[in-house]
Length: 267
Length: 279
Image 1 (cartoon, chains in turn purple, brown):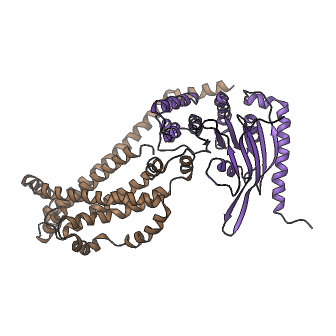
Image 2 (cartoon, chains in turn yellow, orange; image 1 turned 60 degrees about the horizontal axis):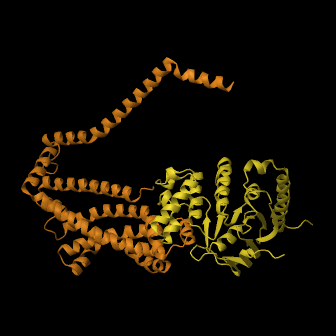
Image 3 (cartoon, rainbow over the protein chains, first blue to last red; image 1 turned 135 degrees about the horizontal axis):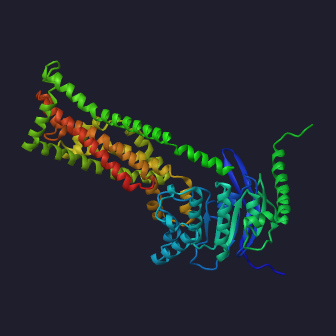
């Protein structure tokens, strides 16, 4: 049986950073195929290059080797939009202007911009805050702005760089569910980054486990839980606890393995 | 259990003697505030009263330190004769023209330097070399180049305003958080959109600080520039009065400088609140 054509095809991507006279291999031979509408999470310890890989997909870095292709369905749509980590909301624009940012840059008709901006403001519960500046919002609200901005831009694929890492746990749960709810509407292809195993299990169709120094793909886990999902449901599912332990064991080996490489061997 | 604790506390706060003590505290705070405000208002009045007294009794030389009331008298005489208007208007005109002539190119160059590294590499050493030279020290050269008339005074002010503004503007752009540049790039901003939506507004707060600094320097410069080869203006008023031993008009000049300095800083603060509502 042949898999449906990939939405994103990543072929042998490597990335080297140069620091003074040293070179650091951040990514090594990353090959990955992502289906249309698939929610894929890159999970790994810090330093595993997952952010670098996402930045390459976002067009913010160039790979040192390899390439990737995104299959377009609509020439009018932007290729990708990113939900940044905290502070990605632009402070000199109001909430509304932030959400409309991508649409305005593409010079879409004012009516369409307004319509789509208001739709996603409503979806994220930001309508009452539309005219405020980000400094007046809490961390969770700011991240909602970031989410609304990316969805409103209606790209071929969504990239998310640890969007909830800076939030407290309660807000994190709420926003995770909100994100999933909004995502369910159109089921765009997503590449999501996190170092939280729980978060990865909750949101993903597939988890790609990465190791550090150099960043490589070491394993994949499929999460076949039905959607829509909720935090409670994942927490109370014994199968998920098993999965958590499996992933944890894997990552633990990777983290400790990477650490022991730097230690001198015992006699 | 929990409920009981809460209700006990509530009772505690509602007890009459506590209400009284809260009222007492509020009153004593208000009294302290009134005392402070009175002190703030009283200090200049006190200084003027002492000055008046010392001057009238000739305990200080009233030729050099004329009584405030006589300075105020001169102030109103000068308004009535129209002399004040001519000095003030010409000075304000020079400041406004010099300020614009200095600020506009400084903002443009500063933005360019902040956005394009080669521009910065090229212009930084020139700025660093020229900045420490007081523009007033260049006045002879400026007079040779621009003549003794209005041109040289406007250029002198422009020169002194230029440096703080250009340096703050470049620093303002350079200090824009990296992530906003990534956001703009990721959402496909054109160079023009990047300039108007990210670089300019992002640099604005630091740029405004430079402009405020420039305003203070412009005021310093106008007085000194008008002491050299001017026939009118607040600086001329101060200098010529001093040379003629007419100290009342000299103090009037000083009062005018203080007044306009305060007005300009109020104006710029208002402008900053309008331009940077997001801070």
